Image 1 (cartoon, rainbow, N blue to C red):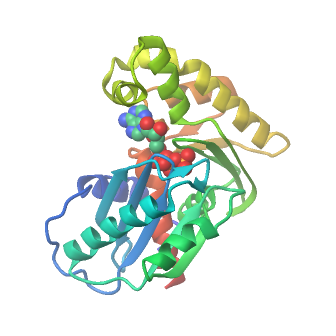
Image 2: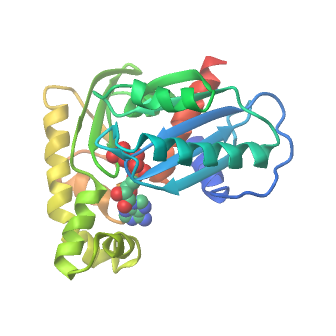
Image 3: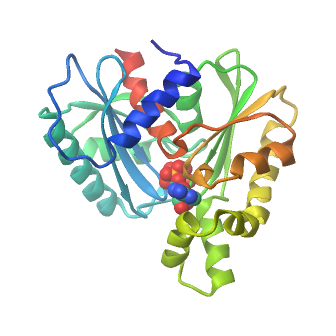
Length: 275
Ligand code: ATP
């Protein structure tokens, strides 16, 4: 069942997007469910998969409990996670004893596993974020590039194995700050403008920051035989990001239909692989 094909991955991502923050009770899933918890700098996502790996719930809260891979507000993180766990359990009519989680490359995994501990959940699966994506998909000589809220992370995959991973602090938050400065508006308003403003203008203003992200990736992949880039992370929702990476790095780029949900899907699928 794993690794998944690219069309099948995209189909599951669309399914997860259709379920986003849907609290309506779902029919009882057949077989055991697998829960994935993604604690990011911009949002926390809980995604549950049924025994076949089909998304059955997906809850997301925008929050700032993590910064550069470090949980800066532990009590806040636990509170958000408790709320999302309750919503997941109420929707599915079951209670979870285990979950999978992740962390940015080079940071301490305990920061995420402490939160599971506080929720009374055992760790079913644990891997750094790009490695989760590398395990989900069939990849060869590919750099998985995760552009999240706070950082840009790269994992180079060869023969289905991650041979290098790195993470540096430039992410979507930096684009938001550029927009805030340009328009003379507070960051919260700039965050909204980033998603709803004129895409061509936003891309033009974001371009220098995106080029900085490309430089980070160029540094990460230097010396590795990389044939394609796979983009993931919420910042890749910005229309045209794939074109900038392709132009600057001169490599073919794959972009999923729902870049914000690929890492959460891959984290939840760790439990599936673990059985
Ligand atoms: P990190 O990986 O740095 O820990 P994270 O996991 O919280 O952060 P993601 O959830 O992958 O990061 O992405 C969050 C970022 O995606 C935020 O900066 C947010 O502004 C950006 N983002 C989300 N949706 C969109 C959109 N439609 N257009 C542009 N940016 C978006």
